Every structure is written in structure tokens, then in C-alpha cells.
Image (cartoon, rainbow, N blue to C red; front, side):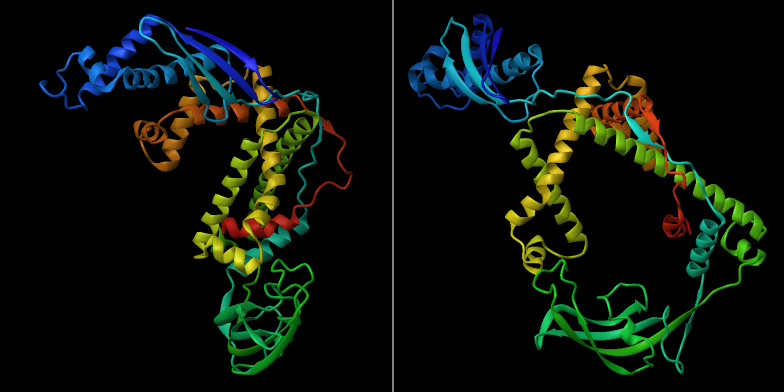
Length: 447
């Protein structure tokens, strides 16, 4: 087989491929055997007519076309491999010549991954803050534990206060008309949580059980639903229940109740260890993100539109899955947000372009540094997955099928590892980084 490559533009190439005559003849014979089974020829049992009879009956062209369909896919794959091309779309194939006893010639026009001009990706300067946990951070963590393990008391005589959970029925109107979605029954709302529109919760402080209140609020000018942005809404609210949290005192008994520690002092030490480990993980994640962003920004690449469109489509499918979990269709979401599919695609385009460029740059770094997944790494990853999913290795491998995606993921991770290992620490801010804002998440996740 012979194959030549002509570069047409920044993303397209034209392959001209010539397949040797003996291989074509073998394909013609295979094509005859396929077609003869499909045609009823008078005087012959089905599938038994000689080739020359079949050619007389249906003509040579169907046999030649069938032979081309047998030969072309494999020959195309071989040409792509030989010239180390990375197609990103299906080829447009043109059959140039197919004759008995002659080579088959065809052309394939295909879009390929673009060339990436890497900038500086070694010695990237990234900040590595000190792992610092204060007593205040530990206090905040303990406060979240108290909240999580609080007992709930029903309040009947006292008015609702900030921090209480009120169970409400509510119905909202905009411009005097009921608006879909601005209503609910037996809805639990913690006063002061900021869950509802600003001003709503504050107007329920002081309300009593079974009291009805009129709450008037204005939606923020930048509210995500454009038809509500900046508008005034009036809610009729009925207090169906008031619940108050009672926090346990912070002592050794509390420590025993919420952990395996025997004393409050031991619990504080355990919390410090958890926060420090969480902070280390966050710093590592931030460093990895920073080196990838810097290496990507330093590179130059002309993004193929087809790759960007596919990434946009992928983001839309992900949105659909998330909406489906909330029992909302994409059409309902678009209607309620006042957006069109064009609006959604424009919204997703910057992120899609960033993702595609990042992917191409990391692939280029992996090639430049001869980074690839080893068999040992693939084996270790399969064993890890088997442990996570509680399956044996054979079952995991069967589910994975082609291991190319797994190998690709390992390669990309190793490329990022390379960037981190070859980066340098930038001076960090003297006051370090506080972790107090994360303590609530950790307590909720680990409680």
C-alpha cells in the first residue's frame, strides 16, 4: 500500500491511498461471495452462481463497490497510522479507481488535530501556601459539629428567631399575578440561611405558629431568571411550624458522642489533623490547576471548531442529566430562564474552548516528554477500580472494554505531574491562607 499526505489548510489533510492489486483481487472475491448469497439467479441455487454469471446478472459495479467497502476502511487506518495522523472527524472518501487486476486508488479528506506550539512549561512559578490551621478554624469546625448533632425542639409559644427553622406554606405573585415556582407547602426554611430572596427571611423573624404574614421582596437586578430580575414580588406566608436547635455543650461527653475520641482535647487534635490534611490536598489541587493554566496560556493553538462544538454538546448533555435528576426537562429550563439553545451554546463556548485547548496542550507536553501509561500503571489503576467497585479485575476489564481511554487518562495525569514536579514555588502571602471557610464542608462531609 502507498499513501501520500497533502496539507489542505490548518486542520484538514488529503490522503491519496493506493492499495495493491492482489489485495484488491482478494476483496473482489470476498465481495462476490457476499453478494452471490443475496441474489436469486434463475438456473442456480442461491449462493452457487459463478462469479462471471453474477457479474452478467447484476453488473460489475456492485461487486467493485462492495470490494471498495471492504478494502478502504482498513487501508485508511493503515495510512493514518503510517503518517501519525490524529483524525478528529470521519473522512470524506472519494473512490478514484477500482478495476480488476489493478490497484485500487481512493482519496480521503479528513480533519486532524492541530499543531500545538508549546510555550514555556518547565519552571513555572506557582504559589504554595503554608499549611496553617488556627484555633479559630478548629472552633469553627466544632461549631459545625454542634449544629450537625443538635437536637430539634418544636416551639409553640415563642416567636420565631434567627437560626430557627420555620415550616411554611407560601405563594408569590408578581405584578398581581401568580408566578410558577413561587409557591410551596410545608417548606423548611432556616431563618438567616440566605436560602430565599434577600429580605424574605428577615420578615419572618418574630412570627408565631399559624400566623399569616405578607412578605414583600425585590429580586436582585442580576437574578438568573431574567423575567424576575429587579421585579417586586409579594408572598402570602403561613407559619406551619417552628423548630429550634439545641446545641450540646462542648465537653468530653460531646467528643465521645461525635467521634472515637475520649476527650475534647483529643477531638481538637483530630480536627487539626483533618484540617491540615484537607488543606494539603487543596494546595496540591490549586498547584496542579495553576501549572496547567499557565502552560495552556503560554501555548498557541488554532482550535478546530468541531472539537469545540463537541465539547459544547457534552456540556449540554451534562446539564440535561443534572436537570433530569431534579425532574426538569431542558425545554422547561430554557423556558423558565428565558434562554434559547443558541444562548446556551454561547454561554458554554468559552469554557468549551478552554477545555479543548487545555486537552491539546497536555497531549503535546506528553508527546514532547515521551510520557505514556505503562502496563504496570494500567494494571494498578484496574486493581484500584476493582477495589472501589467491589468487582474482580476481569469484570472491570470487561466493563472498560478498550483500555485506550484509561491509558489516555493516566497519560494526562502524568503530564500534569510532570508540570508540578518541574515547577518552582513563588513567594506566598505572609499571612498564609485561612481554612475556616472550608470547615463547614468538611464537618458536613465527614459527620
